[in-house]
Image 1: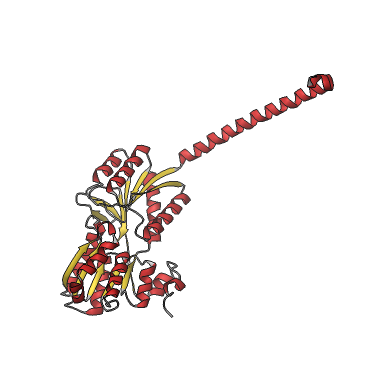
Image 2: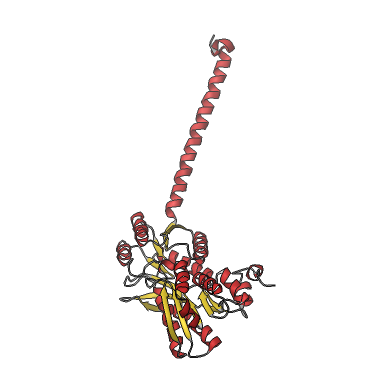
Length: 353
């Protein structure tokens, strides 16, 4: 017996009507979903697309830079595709080429090598995509904007910390990052100026490829007799300073040899209040990352970046946004680091009663 026979003609008509209503409702619903999807797709296509390639996240501060940059860009209506090259230059070249192929509106690069990225950056510019150098310059590339701290002043502040503490005619060792990083060259210029000014003797020097801390640790251990003659060790960043101080501690020299670094990493601030590291150079990365995101969005919109300062990249004078670094000692730790919210007081003083 069919359903129509069982319930009669009146019931069957009612059932057909209900079915028709359901079909219309489903059809209408699908139409709305399609319209919504089209509308959402339209919205996504209107968003500014920024490609951002980092050297790596080995250095502690880069994670802060990334988070602030991405958050600020989102507030300004942009999406950021963040890539990490893990210290591999060919990978970074590939990432930038990917951004070019994708047709992003702007590219931001934390360069591994100041020279090796020249060709791919020129490709981006030829494709009409503006390129920003974030913190580290890419040389001979005529980038649209270079934003960083005053790196020569970073080195100058390191030198001042050592020579104000020790005086003139001292023996100094330099443990630095890779020579392919243009910032390393700039920092060295500032530090060497102070060293000449104070008649210091550079008795040893090493460069840590890829900013690998183990190279610094091995250098100190393999040159123990030289290290024992040193009055101070200038370290390219706080990560290098940390392993240098560990090696010094094993020689019972921690706190006796003056050590300086940069980046204001938490463990560096802890060492400063404990007395094993003399100072660090604080570079307010929140300011750098926020400003960089704002400028990246402006570049993506085709807006002109107005800055009176320019920096010669070896061939071209490129627009340069320069931020000021701050020397951090035990005496000004609270006002510069803690009051500013960069690190918590209980974390900095965790090992100090």
